[in-house]
Length: 185
Image (tube, rainbow, N blue to C red; front, side, top):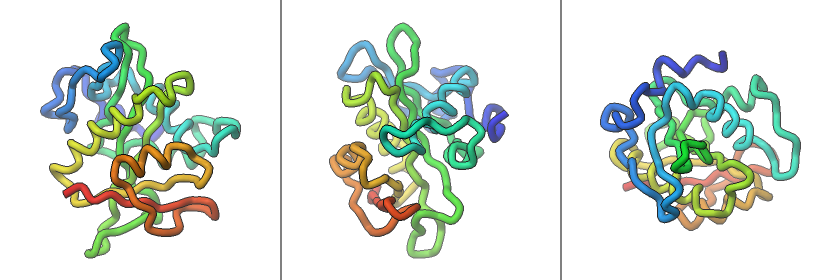
């Protein structure tokens, strides 16, 4: 199994959001999409979204057991947030993780949580990423001062991150990575 996060992260009841850290169960502006906490049945989809999150645009997807994919999986205690169509098909996911070495740290040297977000290829550009980001930011603002993300210079998601308040603060992972930080409070 991919970094066994099933037992510690995914909940059995998607409506039990108070215990999951996702307090944003709601309908999206598109009434055919809703936001919910991940459940045990979402493991394969979360791995798939991690595969999409770690590639450079137009490159082949890495294998699900690739080291970069495994690093992006949610750590213990983090419950991903899922966007799904009303008929139940997941179309996107978001969570935080900690890269090694950390992308950025706070003033005390503590690693900042790093964003991982993925939207199904056929649904990109439809607002799902923004909905997922809003849900995550609302939850994290309760427990974190700031967060970060690494984005490839060719990734069109950089515009979404900027609209949501992230700012480029320097070099990210790899020669074409940009580190972006968002203050949450």
